[in-house]
Image 1 (spheres, rainbow, N blue to C red):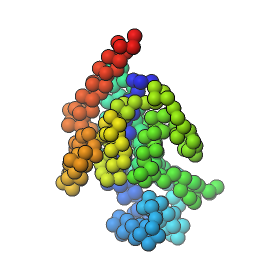
Image 2: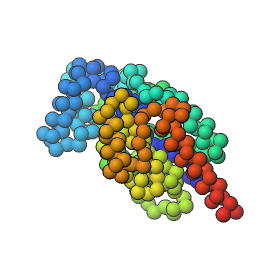
Image 3: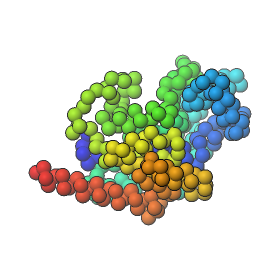
Image 4: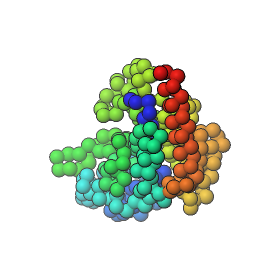
Length: 277
């Protein structure tokens, strides 16, 4: 991986968009109100000492089967239409890529989310990402989801940081390659890695990058004091490098911090080239 590559990694729900992607259309499709659905998921998880991500994935399939509701990939894809993004998100990727290009930096974007890959694939920003790591299902011949294919929770999110860093992203069934010893110069430097998240489930990724010299951001909904308090706490607890409103417009606080870091990274890159040539 080229040393002028920069990886921007994002959680999705409440980092790029308001609320949870399941809330907008999937849960109503299943005949539930949002609070009722998540209450049942949480109780099912507690009753079975179960990972909450697996609990919600199971609940979706269980209810769909009981009510004979079709939720194949096409249905999931179309459920993305109700997602409401934070200001500037739709323009962010092309704009920041162009800024990076002017600095001789190649910015790549990734999703690492406990949300649903099949829904993310239906979003209008899907094409902006080099890879998406999120929860997904195995489907039967009729297209019905039958079992989790990938379940991304708060702790195993970190494996995808390492997969990106080692360029081991294509074969998720391969647990050997991601753990093989690779020379440091062949890996993406931690300082070239930026992680954007909103809360407690992002802490392992945030803290790992901060400790290793990378860049972690706690972003928060501009209309939620509770979300702001969470971001401030993450910063005060030294879990993240920076915190800012989830405002991706030009000249926002987040935009200015990211651009300053990219400029510094570009200067470091130039200095390293001068030293080594």
